[in-house]
Image (cartoon, rainbow, N blue to C red; front, side, top):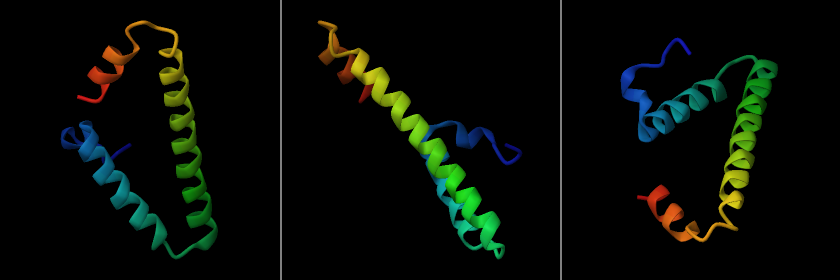
Amino acid sequence: MSEVQEQYLNAEGMVEQLNLLVEQIESYPDAKIREKTLDLVQIILALHREALRRVLTSFDSLPEKEQILSRITE
């Protein structure tokens, strides 16, 4: 990731950078490359979504579940 700078290391900065890159990809003239790149982004997002789902599901049996979820969302 050659364009990663310190300002993008927080969540808001990463979302902003991701949105900017997706906009640039959507305007790329080569349709095949554009489609494959957007597919790649979708697969990465789905992978992260599934990983997060599994982590959160692992909390279901813990008595401290509510405390953990509360701290995560602070």
